[in-house]
Length: 185
Image (cartoon, rainbow, N blue to C red; front, side, top):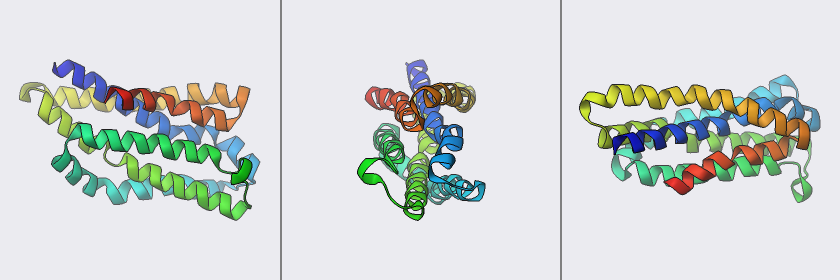
C-alpha cells in the first residue's frame, strides 16, 4: 500500500516540476513576444521563488493540520490555474502594455510559487503517514528524485510544442500532467 502512495507522490513531484520549469524553457519566445530584457525575465523567474519562500513554513503547518491529500488537491488545482493564466497573458482580451504583461507574469509566477510551497512539506507528511518508519528515508529519497525527472521532462515537452505551436500551447500542455495527478488525488 505504501508503494502506491510513494508512486503518487513521485508523479505529483514530477508534475509540479514540469509546471515550474515550463516558463524557463519557453522564456526565449516569451521574451521575444513581449520585448522583455533578460533582467525583466529574471524578475519573472524570481517572483516564483519569493512566493515559494514566503509560504514554505506556513504550508508545512497546513500540511500537518489538513494532511497531504487535502493540501495536494488545493495546491495542484492552483498550479494548473496559474499555469493557464500565464499562458493567457498578452493573448486576446488579455492584450496589455508591456508593463502590465510583465506585472501579470510576475504575479502569476509568484502565485505559482506560493501554491508550490506545500509540495515537499505535504510529501514528507504523506511519507510519514503512509510509509513504515524503516522505509521513510528511502521513500523521501525516491520522491525527491522525481525533481530531476520533472526537470528533465519539462524542456522535452515544452520545447517541441513551443516550436510547433507556440509557447502558450506548450504552457497549456505542461499543465496536463498536473491535471492527471489532481484527478488521482
